[in-house]
Image (cartoon, rainbow, N blue to C red; front, top):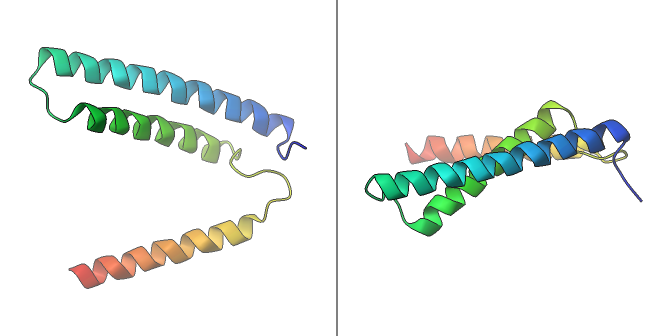
Length: 97
């Protein structure tokens, strides 16, 4: 059973597309900078950075187009959990300084 409506499926498809293209462009840019300039990080680290950038693009498109949560999912619960994590992070950051 599909938990997403048609609009969300299309938005997720667009997000996958842009995330994939971002990954390809980021890997090409990393490869060119690694060849032409002195290597600035380890190869695995560079690839992981590219993957994180592409996931950030995917997530931001899904969030902006409201395609991250399916029909019938409890969004209030998810927002509450994120708020608790955010507040905990602020508190930890305040104690570290």
